Length: 509
Image (cartoon, rainbow, N blue to C red; front, side):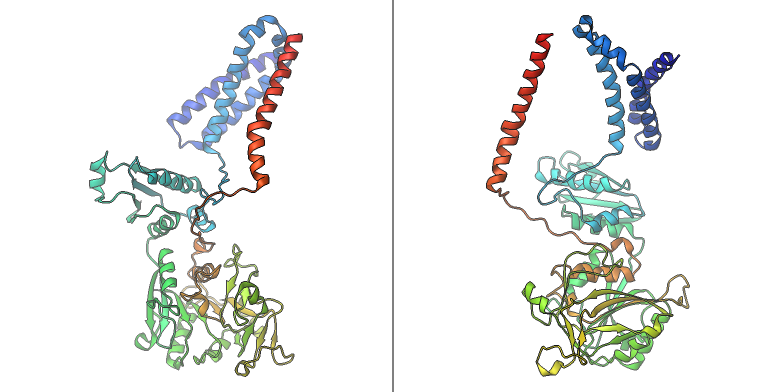
């Protein structure tokens, strides 16, 4: 009875393997159905193999079996198993990137964006088949498609299919056209950064607006010089935001379409009427990023006290900066408290000329507070800024680590939207986001993650990709010897030894 059941299951398994392959060929989208079928079939085949193992072994010892019959039987059996495994692995596969530059690996931010796509996005690439760009486009698009089923692509040679190129109005090769819903975006550079930025924009139904306060000596988003915020503006736009400047004296309030307001280093007095507009904005669920420098004359100290922030009149001194080639007045943060903004960050952040702040304990019942960046244990907050001396004075200065940046959430829900409480971030430095420092180490990631957290864009909170480097591969003497001996001598030698051993054993029989 057991043998009959085994034979039936073996036959079903073999036929089921072929049926699963045919079903997958006809309906490749039926992943779950095909996977379940093939797993069951694989179980049947293994059961048949186990129950007939003794018979197969005895049969293989016969001379007639060794002449061919056994080989045919085992070949058919393994073909069935290979078909099952091939179907399973075609939809459930893993990729490993062993290239030095991680050429086929996407940045954590890109992966997060792809896994959180809301729309199906079709990418039509117009690339000449005879160019190297074709291979680069295939590698990149396959890497994107591997992360999400919502990405589909087709590559078209505009020379061979001019009708499609004309339909899309393509006049330049190496162009990718992205379509998602009613959105369309064109990319003329085949690289991860440009492509993911286009996907972010196509994936959105409407752009969120980021305002930068101006009129009080703040860094300007149109200023391309070292002290400007033009790099920050460009980076935010690549993340899919619309960026505008705001003159509160003209508007009298924060616009209704504001997702985040950035107060980027005000140096002169902010008028009471403007602060009233800011307070009304926060009370209605607004999101603000306060970047307040040491010795700022904006008089934000009193305003922020209402919101649980005690800005210190100090200058952070950090001896660790010397190890990074900086000055004592540029505190370096290379470890971060646990928070969504900093969870994936590993690179250090530089805060040139920064102040510290503390959270007021009496506000704990109203406000949730989380530190984001703290100076090192050997740093301190120097209160005698004008003296020109950098020496820690117990009882007067603030011993490190001191807080440079922190995130706040008002526990009381907003008046207009009970599901969206007010949020704000305070940092004791605005220069870390200027053109001079934004591209240094982790500065850009921290700034962009701060804005994305405030804008409720969790999918954009991550570590951005870095430009790939190209160059020759240099091996040490030991590595060179390994690359010679292992593939050229050791592996072929082992194969030869095993072959001779098997041949001698068979000859003795």
